[in-house]
Image (tube, rainbow, N blue to C red; front, side, top):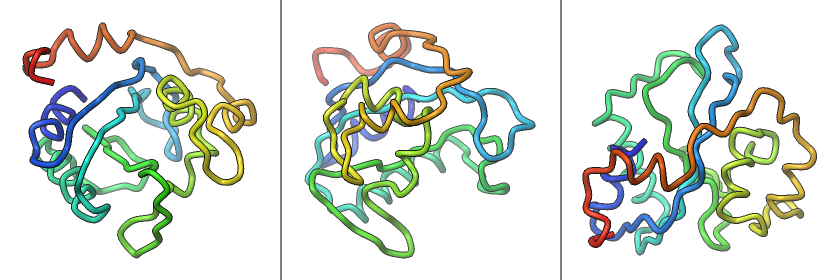
Length: 157
């Protein structure tokens, strides 16, 4: 995750502003696989949504993401959850993310960063109260996981 964030942070037009704590979560969809690690990042960007998606997919490819089984094991998964007041639905991208209100593995780290973020008629903190949070464990604070292995000097962020 640090490598993906570093790739985004060094991309022209993207700056990583903050990250959530790191969580271990039960797998979603295909349950016969190891637990996932999940976090959210707040970025600032001048890129349009499609260009931001391209940067995210480039980072996934650079980190050897192979898309073979929907919701199956993966090395990395970078999603765009929300982008200011953008409402977009194309074949490639939907903003806000269409299923984030159903997923504790998204909502818990999202609430770390933006509890008041509104989508689907409720804020992230309210959506979180409606989902099953069983099995989600905080593994490291944002400071512990992001700064511990990031290769980019803190003063240049």
